[in-house]
Image (cartoon, rainbow, N blue to C red; front, side, top):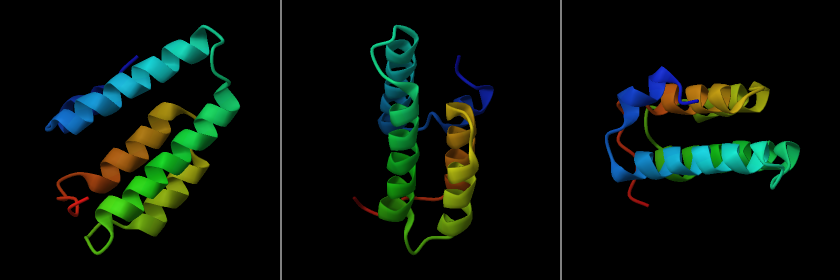
Length: 94
């Protein structure tokens, strides 16, 4: 269910909210209350928008991270690309 990598990123309440959202989305898909294709596409866009909004003008390689997200085939791969890119980088004020 949760990838072990996430335990390294549980540093703020926002990260807890992201995990709850991930689990809820997973549950909705398993119970056929959400379509995987559109939900996955939207999730990728949310993550890429977060990179641009929160990590512009930081050391995060937004172009490379976005490309990895685009090529991801699973939620875990999307999360891995996102969290690897932002690891130890302070986001901009939102």
